[in-house]
Length: 81
Image (cartoon, rainbow, N blue to C red; front, side):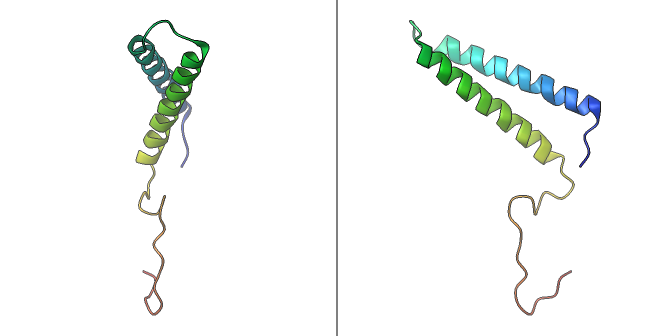
C-alpha cells in the first residue's frame, strides 16, 4: 500500500485534531485542581486515541483486509485456491 503525500498530510491533521479534541474533553471532564499526574494521564490517553484512529483509517484502506490480523491456515488435504 502506497500513501500519497496528500493522504499523509490528511492523516497527520486528523491525528492532531483527534489528540487535541480528546485532550480538551478530558481536561474539561477531570475535577479541579489538576496535578501533574492528571496531565500525564490525559496526554497518554489522547495519544492512544490518535494512534488508534490512524491505525483504523490505514486498516480500512488495505486492499486485502481479511488476512491482515488473522491468517487462515490451510488444512491438510485442502487445496490452496
